[in-house]
Image 1 (tube, helix red, strand yellow):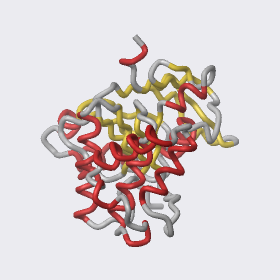
Image 2 (spheres, one colour):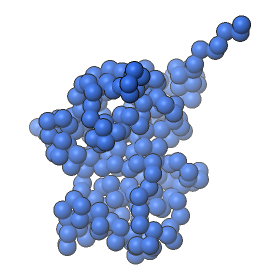
Image 3 (cartoon, one colour):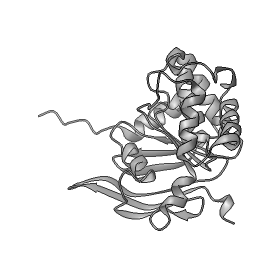
Image 4 (tube, helix red, strand yellow):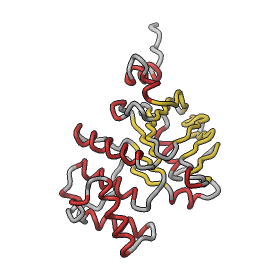
Length: 245
């Protein structure tokens, strides 16, 4: 039934004036899958995320979340999505728990049910012992983990992360990437937008987006082939050199 559907994107197109930001984009992310949306800056990743979160409304095609059509049942669809955007929105002078309680309230959770949801989300990110620290006291990696915990409070079925490791050091990046792979293994459908191939594991699904089009969709191991993921991605997205005049 509905419960086993993940994220389904069918023939999605979007224009800014004359420019096609997304051109006939189709792919699915099943529950329990970590899907890397891999593309250079300007590929259309941010436009797709704006459509998936209804910051903008789709021009063409359909998006369905856990079986709910985004255009026809937007509230039901959005209720099943957790999002981590590039720009953090945290109150630095509140504790981690207070930040999460405020967010829980936005989803209609309060009292004991909010407390349980907050404790579970923090535990999933290895953040339980930080619950009563001020956000200001956390390092960048722990702040980002807190944002991911916050995105899980309402128990979404789909988790969207837009360049989730921007600005973090190598150890923090690795920790975040590992945690989110773990979330996928626990049954979430994860869409992880990135331009960094080292955040992708061999069994992951990789959707290569370039100039608004899907160039490839399949397991990372298959895309990597003999040359490796970095080389395959560069070859696929290389711009033709200008001919010397």
